[in-house]
Image 1 (cartoon, protein in one colour):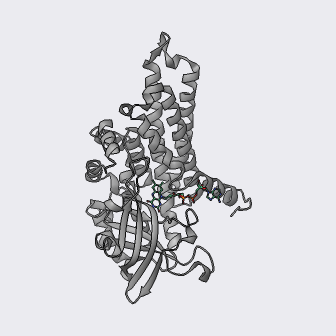
Image 2: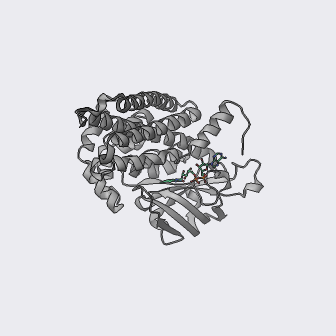
Image 3: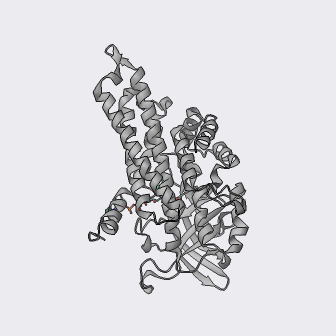
Length: 379
Ligand SMILES: Cc1cc2nc3c(=O)[nH]c(=O)nc-3n(C[C@H](O)[C@H](O)[C@H](O)COP(=O)(O)OP(=O)(O)OC[C@H]3O[C@@H](n4cnc5c(N)ncnc54)[C@H](O)[C@@H]3O)c2cc1C
C-alpha cells in the first residue's frame, strides 16, 4: 500500500489547488484529472485481472481515494467508475461481463452513473416509481430520477426500476430490477438529462425518462431481484466514500496544524494556545479511529464477508470526523479560511455532502438501532 499511496500523491501533485478552484468557479468537470486517473489504472483496481483490471481489491481502492482527498483533490468526479461495475461483475451474465468489463477496465467505456434516487421516494427506495414494462425483447421505461451524478460524463448507467408494482409483490423490496442503459443511445431518445447546480462542483443531474427503450439483454441478473443486487454495491460505495472522508479529514488536520504552528498573533504561534491546539488534536484522534473502522469494513468486503453494518458505521464515523475537522480548520485559519486561495472553504463545502449522500446519517443510526440492537423500527 505505501507504493500506491506514493504514486497517487505523485499524480495529484499535477493537480494543485488552482486547478480545482478554477473548475469550482466554472462548475466544470475535471476531465484532465479523470483522464490521468484512468491512464494510471487506479480506477480499475476492483476489476479482476481476467477482465483487464488489476484485481487489487477494496482496500487498495480505499487507499487511492483517501490519498486523492488528502492531496486536496476530489475523487467524486470518477469514484463511481471504480465500484458501479460491481453489480455487473457479481450479477451480470458471462456475456455481459465479457462485453463490458474489459472496456470499463481500460476506460474506453465509462460506467459511472448509478440511477436510484427519485424525487418522490427519497431514501425510501422501495417506493421508486420508474417502471420498466417488458414488450418482447425490449423494456419500455418511464419515470424520473434525481441527483444522478456524472450522467453527462458516462457512457453507461445502472438504472434501478420497478418491473412489478410494490403492491403486487410479497416483500416491498421485491419487484425491482437493474438495467444497464447505454446513455450514448438513450439521450434524446426517451432520456433527457438536466444538470442541477449545487453548492459544490459535483456534475449531478435530474433524469426525465419517457418511453425509453432498453434491450431486454441489458437486464442484469433476474427480473425482480434488483434491490439485492444494488445493496452489495452500496456497501462498496459507503466504504469508499468513507475513505474520501478520511482523506478530507487528514487534509484539514494537516492544514490546520501547519497554520497553527506558523501563524503568530499576540507574539506567539496560535497553536501554542490550547484552545486552538486541542480541537486539532481531537480531530486527529477521531480521524485515526474512523480510519480503523474503514479498514475493518474494507477487509470484510475483500474477504467476501457480510459488511453492511461496518460499511455504514465507517461512513458515519468518517463523515463526522471530516466535517468536524473542516470546521476546526476553518476556525483555525480565522478570516483566511474564507479566502478561496486556501482551498479550505471549497473542501469545507465538499466534505459536508457525505453526511447526506450516499446515505444520510439518520438512516445509518436507524440501521444500527434496529438491525444490530433489535430496537423497533420507526418506519
Ligand atoms: C450531490 C449529490 C449527489 C448524489 N448522487 C447520487 C447518485 O449518483 N445516484 C443516486 O441514486 N442518488 C444520488 N444522490 C442522492 C442521495 O443518495 C440522497 O440525497 C440521499 O440518500 C438522501 O435522500 P433524499 O435527498 O431523498 O432525502 P430524504 O429521504 O428526503 O430525507 C431528508 C432528510 O430526512 C431524514 N429522514 C428521512 N426519513 C427519516 C426517518 N425515517 N428517520 C429519521 N430521519 C429521516 C434524512 O436522514 C435526511 O436528512 C446524490 C445526492 C446529492 C446531494
